[in-house]
Image 1 (cartoon, helix red, strand yellow):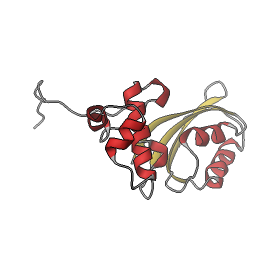
Image 2 (cartoon, rainbow, N blue to C red):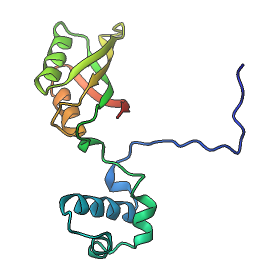
Image 3 (cartoon, rainbow, N blue to C red):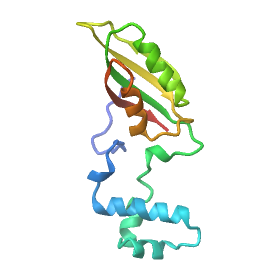
Image 4 (cartoon, helix red, strand yellow):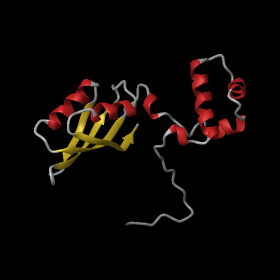
Length: 156
């Protein structure tokens, strides 16, 4: 039986957001986490002091922010939507580019072309891709007849 969730129940929602629009305290938390990863001898006290961040702000954000392009030894699945011109061989070129950067296509769907334009939705395992998300999207966008690439989903 379908039940509505009570209005006072909260659910955690996740967002994909560029680093440069994050509040300063969140950006500093990222820097502290990176410094702690790189130097096992560094204490939290010393790291937050180095980046002029309060310990309370660090503890508030430390378990809530994770860089998506630095996940190691975890499965990274992406779903991309490509806006393309309908030309013979265009899809093969895109798939070759994904294979070239060590991506593995999981699913693919191409819409019916309308006015010589189509969309392609590609889900891929990006675990072995050594590019950042931006670099991957730029690499695909360099393919002939690909006008735009957007991330529409991600699982880690």
